[in-house]
Amino acid sequence: MRKVHVITQKEAVAEEKLKGCTAVVIDVFLATSTIAFLLENNFEPIYAVKDSSQAIELSKQYSEPHILLGETKGESIHGFQYPDPCLIRLSDKKKAAIICSTNGTIAIEKASKANVLFVSSLVNGHLIAERIHLQQDNSSVVLVCSGNDDRFSMEDFIGAGQIIEHLLKKGDYELSDSSKLAREAYCHADAASFKELYECETAHLLKHFDFTGSVEFVLRHHEKIDVVPLYTEGKIVNDHQKINTRRSWRRRSIEERTLDGD
Image 1: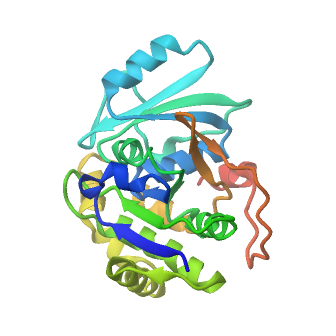
Image 2: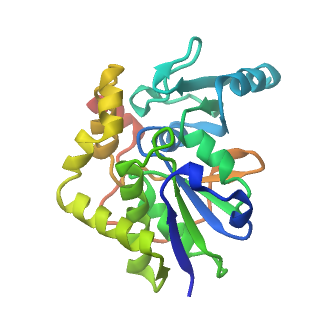
């Protein structure tokens, strides 16, 4: 039986221990949500780097069309688009993106030694769980909550619980104590329409920096984004392996969401 464990913040990641594991990085507000929306809007591949210096250096070396996104401790960076999914607009053809952030992209780097590494948020965690369940191996599953600058983040823990809840709907898994609590947190939050997340620390931080619609935007798209971000060879791409599922909802097209003002 495969084991599932939740690491509550990136600073607790023991990088060498992830070798041979299937890992998932979660940063609900905002990096991993933004990555999901970037892939949906035709930005691929995506390069997640730890800071603006790395992003600028990579941008200088990258000859293909691309965009730069980033923040540091919630502050905007000159010359970068803020990594807010509300601001992502459809690209006419595939275009690369380079993104840096205080938490999510650093967590991705720390988890990069995993055998398989996915990127998840509340907008697509159900598909990440399905993709993990389809794996033909017995690797342990490690869910890495990015946290909030060396602190626990409620939203990431709930995002981890989402994956666990969907895994258990598909089969038997051995849960660590942190996994059991994360699942309970997600089920409670989902039943309450995620009301507590509107008052979490990160939500208040985003309001402070005048990104007031970000939390509502992400939660409104709970399980509505049809992408499976996979980290491979230093970049994030959409995992195109077929996922056979009967969904009770159907994803609206990008064009429909644009007309609705989402």
